[in-house]
Image (cartoon, rainbow, N blue to C red; front, side, top):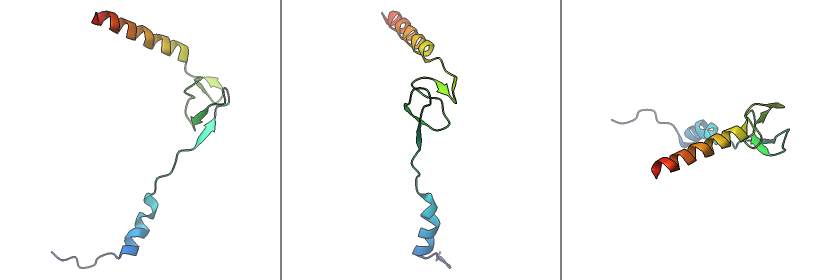
Length: 75
């Protein structure tokens, strides 16, 4: 089948001009001054908008405890 009305190259490229990727923007954490993604919890301290949201110490302890249990189970 032959295409009856084909788009020109410029028409196609104009349509695709909005397909460009946009880089993510980072901001400094108010608590620890580390770079973090905007509108997300800080991965280093667990604060979001001045409030403690995640207790990262408990989270790491839980992860270590789980790893030790898995190692003991493997032996």
